[in-house]
Length: 153
View (cartoon, rainbow, N blue to C red):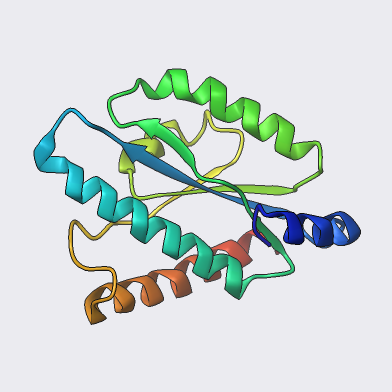
């Protein structure tokens, strides 16, 4: 289920079955023109990736809106805001709260996040509709789905 009206209406009727929240962690920056394309591409791939995971695990997961943050922001300041999100999400209740990210710096804060940070390596560039990108997404989705299922046991 996604964060949209139709899905949320279904969620309210079946919330006892939907125990996993998925939130993409999406950095952006405007300081470095050389990095703009890379960050935009990675944000697009992460969005597609998140939607594919939700599609595969529909009925068990809720895909929340992405959490956007400045690439240059101090992570410890973002932690407070992220943990506020988690507190609100747990009231529904969601047993598992998973953050998906290409930003490896979040792994340093994994213990401070009151959910789980799932980091995986990103493609640095490419085209969304290329065979390489589609193959990368398909392979990563399969691996992350296996990892998410391990949280359920």
